Amino acid sequence: VQLQASGGGLVQPGGSLRLSCAASGRTSSIDVVGWFRQAPGREREFVAARAWSSDLTVYAGSVSGRFTVSRDNAGNTMYLEMSNLKPEDTAVYYCATGTSWRWARFKSKYDDWGQGTLVTVSS
Image (cartoon, rainbow, N blue to C red):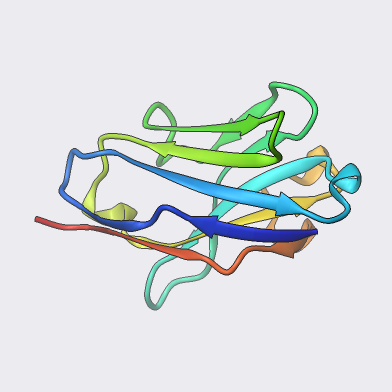
């Protein structure tokens, strides 16, 4: 599966941003879509995930209630809608696909990764 992430940028605290991740290739193998982020000097961390063929979702506690993950079923595009952004949300955001919803929170269980898109939250 090939993934192309986009939508990052500079936003003020309290603002909103939508990230997109277009999937192509062997999409029939996808069971879960995840979003992760990596801030400078920190490890890549789980943000959110959605089952590919159902509405099951799971979120990290730090973003629950502010971020929403969804999928455009017709176009194989995944979205991460981010609102009420905070400076601590600043990071490179990555989308990834895996073959098991069971391991949705674990980055080591994802097979394919997008190139990352930078989100900067600053006034």
